[in-house]
Image (tube, rainbow, N blue to C red):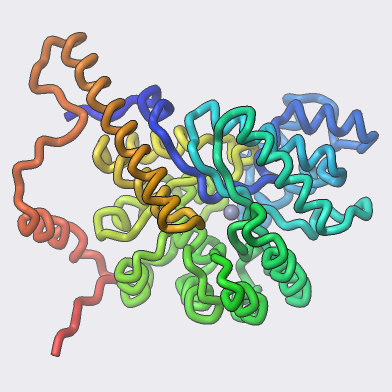
Length: 392
Ligand SMILES: [Zn+2]
């Protein structure tokens, strides 16, 4: 078996369920918007600007978040919000992302007096035109911020409810995790859930499993942003696996914010093998310097993951979208056909190039289901966090 190439990964249909609008601008766009709007950027030099924004130089999540001051300084007008959303569609579509959920916190775009409704509508218009132009489908997630007064989270929840069925598909809690408990935002999440709106929360990135516990049980999150430290609590890990709660994993970003020491130390492979519903996402295309294809390639290159694993994680992405079940069934069936077609095509090409008829992208798996389950269990059971099922 050989591994899928970066080129093949790029051609596969994909999702990005965790991407911040204000972290995903183009560098040139920041410079152009700065000039147009007469905003003083810390530098006009593109290389120097990249050095200041590039999260490879960050030392913690708090440090990582600083680059957003630069991007946000040029995202205070209707035109700039529209442009950011539209260009993000173009960039994601260029690597064959079929569906994307873009998130941002409208309260950070009020510095020049724009009303919250305009801030939402400008982004929705950009996403709609992005779909028309590039064919990519998307939804918008409104993020509340942990380090702000919880009364803001309620206003943003009301905003998400008002735009439900008009492009807003979910609600999120973001921002510095350490010292700001998710529990304080329970009222906003209650408003969201009682209006049948989906929600997610950043948790277990810069803080331990207690943060994930609160996101799930005090806030009722339907997905977890990151969940990197979930492995520290076996009970919670089992709960998340049993309830098929998706993790929005963002590998490179986790390395940059020091949520893990290095890529090899990331728990993604363990979660995947244990049966957690893992999705792979960018977090911030610009600040992290990544794409969905890069993230998947990073996983494949550093872990024992092949084409069938990539297929499973991509399928997880479509399954986890904040969209109706029927919509997901429809897009998923088309995505699977396309993935299988591309894998078969790549295998045929490889056989022709190498003359090796045995070469395959997908493991020829002759093991029965019970053997697979047994092997998976043996592989993951050694993990200290795992507790076992209790039956009467
Ligand atoms: Zn994030």
